[in-house]
Length: 225
Figure 1: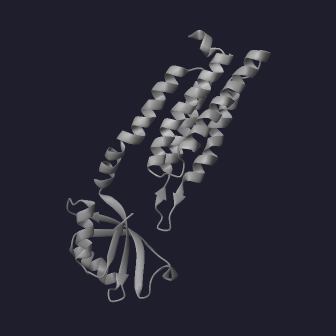
Figure 2: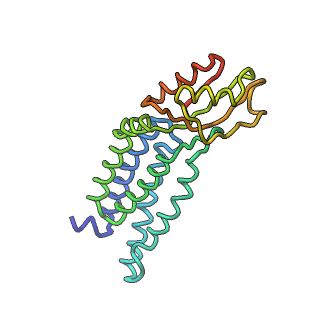
Figure 3: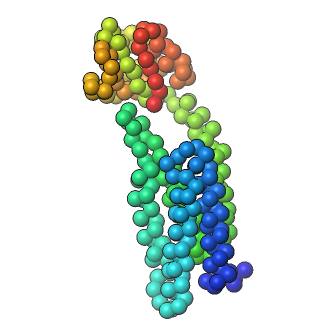
């Protein structure tokens, strides 16, 4: 086992193949969910990190000097630029891509572990990250749906004033806060749109809160964001 931890021809092949395999598993899961970074991106990040780590190890072994993890530190900080590119803020202030960015960073860390020959950490960590990305999505949604406060986009027809809407919502036990109005040019004629935080005085699900809001008028629209 110690032979493949030392940088040799056989160790290089093993590490490249392992980084391709583990990076591919994570990227495949993201690709199935149509995320900005998919199969090829994750493989390249993991494999590139592995190559950087092997290069650093080679310099340390060949010349007997230098910091064997110096280049790894640059990968950890540099991957942030790639991760930031996958984070998108939509027109309605909805943030998407955080999990993909975190996955890319974790994929780089796996590549570094493989590159230095820490196979046990890379394999166990890689499959642990895969389980988090695939199996914990249900729990993540469950926690989100049970949150007391949630963001919503609401459009009111011209026949309903904002003050009337607020008072009617309050009567129904719905508290509205953090209101942010949409620019008029982004809306259809005779409509008023805004993003707000909704919270129910009673213990209601998000769907029930939306249904309660819609009882104010059949002509208004509510969408959770």
